[in-house]
Amino acid sequence: MDNPVNAYRDIIVDLLESYARMPSVGAIHDEVEEQLILDTQRDHYQILTIGWENGRRVYYPIFHIDIRDGKIWVQEDATDFDLVGELERRGVAKSDIVLAFQAPYKRPFTGYAVA
Image 1 (cartoon, one colour):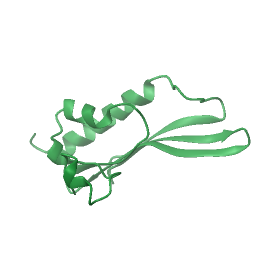
Image 2 (tube, rainbow, N blue to C red; image 1 turned 90 degrees about the vertical axis):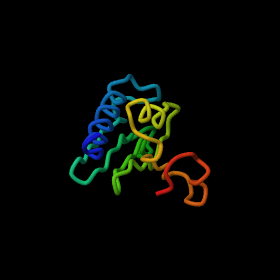
Image 3 (cartoon, rainbow, N blue to C red; image 1 turned 90 degrees about the horizontal axis):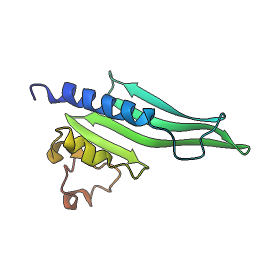
Image 4 (cartoon, rainbow, N blue to C red; image 1 turned 45 degrees about the vertical axis):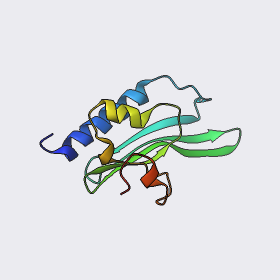
């Protein structure tokens, strides 16, 4: 890859847009929605569930990915979808993926980048 950060942006956007098009499995209804957030200038990417259900506020990230220092930081993956495996299948090296949801002391044992 000539410019991996640009390629990573394209991969992340395509991956999250594809996921966002899939029918929701959870209890999504008129007052709860999934929002796709793509900030390609600051390299923050999310899918959020947001709204109201049974009188309670619903707000949680499904996916949260950042690009920092040329690496993809997976901040959150609240699914059984193999996000990290899909990044690898699309050409991202393990050495460029940080499992940020893992504590820093655990990252050396993951097989992925530590930071």
